Amino acid sequence: MRSQEQELREWMQRLAEDPANADNPLLPELQKLADRHGKLLRQFRKIAKISDRLQTETKEMARQQRQFVLMVSHEFRTPLAIIDSASQMLEIEPKLPVSAIGRVAKIRNAVQRMLHLIERCLTDDRLGTVAAKPTSFDLAAMLGDLVSGLRAGTMTHRLDVHGFDRPIPIPGDRDLLAVVFSNLLENAVKYSPNGGTIRLDLSTGEGQVVVRVTDDGIGVNAADAARLFDKYYRASNAAGTTGAGLGLHLARCIVQSHGGGITVTSEPDRGSTFTVRLPAVLQPPSVAVASPQTADVPEELPS
Image (cartoon, rainbow, N blue to C red; front, side, top):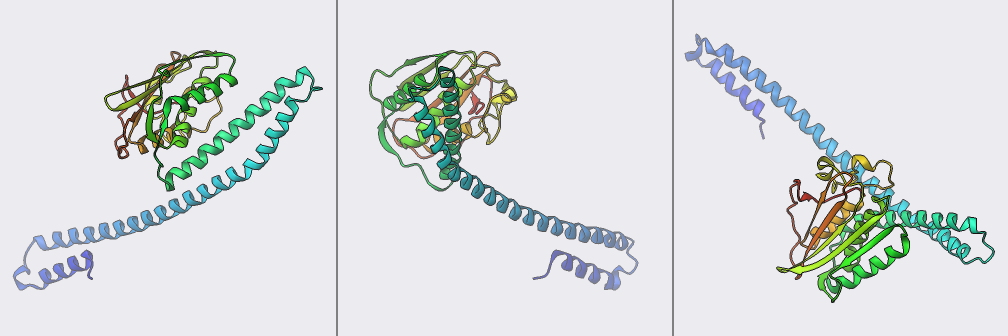
């Protein structure tokens, strides 16, 4: 198959050889344009080759990075489990000095943070390869379990729950949705370093279930809120707090895979409210992402 450059060259040659164009003053200008067009075509081909090579290299780098993260995540589980088991044994040791109790608790908390990060990395990989497995489960009971666990782990925050007075069955992957709400609750604690109230509201209506998590924490500005759900993104005021910027990205992916949506409203130093909407009946995954605005900025907060 002839290239455009070859066709243009042959066309110009036919024009030059035609006796009728012997004295045509436009012929030299056409030749210059044809030469410039040929150079542009060659440059475009070079750019296309470079682009293809970069895409191939980027995909390979992403594959290697993914394999490395998964390998590290799996390898860390065993030593972390050993550390956590040893810490639990120390906690029940009757001769343990009182001064060491707090240190042991810090060790266990650090282990739990690492385990949560590992689970999020593995969940991120699962989302890329395995679809959610919806089954009917009681969302109110699942959230109640998460709140009970959170209450046991914090002494400086007050947990205020509403709408848990009856079972609320919904279709969904219970394990994946637990990742969403545990992340939101943990963030509410983590980004409220001075304590305060964490409010969890559960309601139903118009064929959907709505869960709101509100805190009195550091909040975020509008620019950060617009990107909170981007992978690995962290808000500008979250630099002093541990996190990988993965939790909220996973939350959005999981919620959207259930045909729902997640938004955040927030102001610096005035806290944040995350709103998760899930269908009360099974629906196809949502492909649209809410556009970030002031009152209902799209889905994300520091993670």
